[in-house]
Length: 218
Image (cartoon, rainbow, N blue to C red; front, side, top):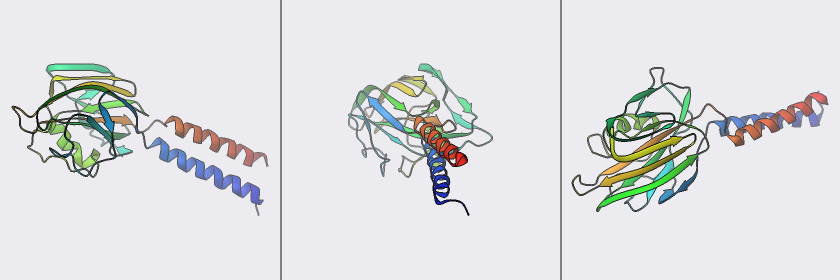
């Protein structure tokens, strides 16, 4: 029979490894700047539910397996994008976490510049109305989004919107107008890498290693 201290060390190591796995699969928003407000996933993000002024952001799904056929996205990796040129790409990877950046221009014209920083590297961004709708079932939270056919975001061209990705931070100027396009919403779905352990997960893995080492020496 194992000594009680050894059994406790084994249990502690197993618990730490389990926590590390959970932390690695849950990259999240860690900070914002500018007129950007982080919230819990809202019940609704349809027009007038989160009226502009601020840009709202929230975490959606964690550790979503990417289909073998890939995910249809607009932007991949690091870079800066704007203007009338269309951007389309396919992301192939192991797993991603998803996050939403949302501006509702109900009642006027809104332009906001800000940043959102995540605990894991950004691998792709979706901003196209059609691709947002197509990815809702896989990557969206329980939040109710505008139904397919509603112009909730731009098409494959960014026009006045500007997006820059650098590592785990997205900088943007987001624009929306309800003047010519009633209740226009602008959204970016940001995908971060769920296959790389976060700093918290690495710390837990280190602690688990120490616990295992102690158990082997006893």
